Length: 374
Ligand SMILES: Cc1cc2nc3c(=O)[nH]c(=O)nc-3n(C[C@H](O)[C@H](O)[C@H](O)COP(=O)(O)O)c2cc1C
Image 1 (cartoon, rainbow, N blue to C red):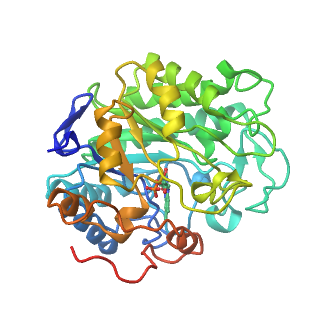
Image 2 (spheres, rainbow, N blue to C red):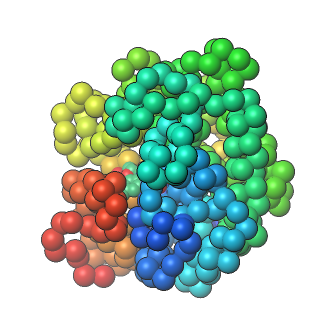
């Protein structure tokens, strides 16, 4: 049997197979951000499907960083009891769970947060969100770094097996890393070392707040597809190497921003390209990044659909784990079906209707008819 179905270690965490549920905003809560029964039901079902590691939808670490009206919150201790239930729903089915910690930065609206959107830099009106973000003060930057650290402490208190810093898709972490979004001229911008400082400080703050053996991962953009140069695979490789040197426990590769390329994940050539599903669209970036990060596990996400390709990617050492989002919305039991030999390919057609729906405030579901029996 393929290595895909054998256990794998992320730092001290043993995952029962190489499959990951990539973070997926569910849009299933009330606006208070408290975990509810609908969310628990979703994660029980996914964990029953034998996914080794589950990353629920991004959780906001500070009130200014709320990205969606029905998003899970982790910005104060009142959320811990609900988050404990989320962890138990997954642990009870022998899955492992990592919380993705996030701040929206400029990719939100006052209607969502009740507050002025903030960002590393104000480079005008955001084409998707229609807001002009206010550049963060030094004090605000420190406050948000501390908020990431405190949120990680809450994740540990809730029993999560690890945390993942969200530094992809144009949210705050990736805004700081991007030469396009971050045009600051103080110690937080101006060159790569300075642009990296925010994510580095977030990592260090998290480390101070969690047990020393708790894995800390990151989701990193390899391409921003912004009008002026942002992150590209070469810059992502530099950041990935620095993260490896810092002691990161796993790097998941992604691309695109909601501001400038909201559906980049279905296009052949970034936002300008043909609109069509593409297989393994972060593989080329992975090939560039894998050699510079030593033994740090690389998690491949993005259009990974065919079992034979997944096996080859793992066997050839191009990535260490296979991460999927949209396929599990259609088929929560996909891993079980793969293992039983009932299918060799995910049924997801990458139509993105799931994404469009949650962005309109609807609850997450697959809009394609005929979900395979599980
Ligand atoms: C409905 C939806 C919600 C998503 N929410 C998140 C999220 O909360 N955090 C994140 O890092 N990525 C999020 N993503 C991106 C996915 O995790 C993943 O990187 C992307 O969909 C590509 O993987 P796939 O081809 O397997 O779907 C979301 C994607 C979709 C479709």
